[in-house]
Image 1 (cartoon, rainbow, N blue to C red):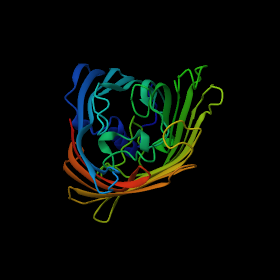
Image 2: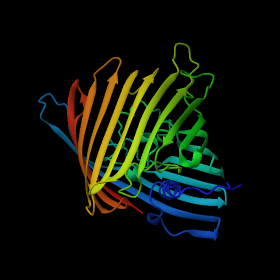
Image 3: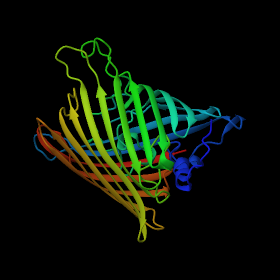
Length: 363
């Protein structure tokens, strides 16, 4: 079923950018069975150099390391006119510790596009909670996600970060003004925390004052392709039935904005999250992330600045300032990003700085 009213020009442009985690030209040619049955292959590699104050007794030693942050093989396609799918395997070490090298089924989604106002997606997917946690890894503003702010976001035992297995309904209303997403997921299935096997509900509501982004993933750094001004709220309830084990509850408020201003393109986004009943991470408290980037017109350079705050109810408060510089050899397809993070993490009770550099290849 198709909607009778056509999408606005801005919504069509946003759909083209946000349908997959990158612009379509970065994918392989289509292997077509017919016009409505086809598949495309994509590959993402992000290789890191990392230098961190290691918290030694002398206080002046540093750890130096190379590792693969992400190495993803992705399959994107269409089975029928209204049924799309996305598959993503990641074989990265995930951190300098290199503690996970086996491939992880990160995403495995079947998307039933009944209409622009109503779509149903089943499988393993990013839970709809914030734009930050639902942004594409290919088009991030900084060198990585604001992980300090998203530290309490639950992860499945398989290691598919911020994903869960379940069902999501979503759609665009009011000619692109309203974007709603809500899902029911497996949640915490451990016998200790949740012997009854209660599920998890997550949802977010976004109001768009400019271009909407109706695809699976959000693009917070379109390099001048989009004008965006969106505000939203999210809620996450992961029920647990264990005696003396609290449910995990979290709510969020967030915004993202992109605009051509003066002689360049400005990108801004921010997220505030309140966490309650959290097991792991920093526990109860709140976190905050604010990011900004500016790319002069015609330039391949993009300075970035971000502030991340962890404010736990008990424990050490952490304010992390990240000063970064991106260089785009070929947009999001090939680029180099670097960031120096002040008070990046706490080791041995002391706040430590870190420097990171990433080389990205996307095809």
